[in-house]
Image 1 (cartoon, rainbow, N blue to C red):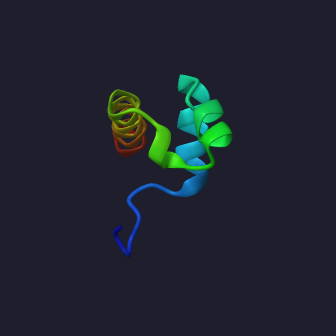
Image 2 (image 1 turned 90 degrees about the vertical axis):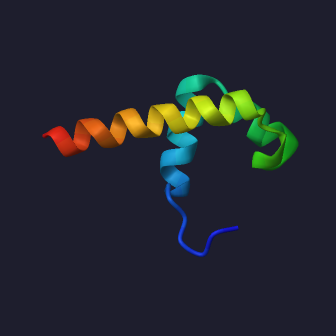
Length: 56
């Protein structure tokens, strides 16, 4: 795992909640149970958020 996380835990949970993945994280007790597809969707959403912030 990286020493410098790219996304804050708060942002990860916000995105997970928006995409409906937060229940998997809570039920399974961690991010390891999230599918690679859902992880990819979370990254895509994080990039969209970052691009919006940069354009402001």
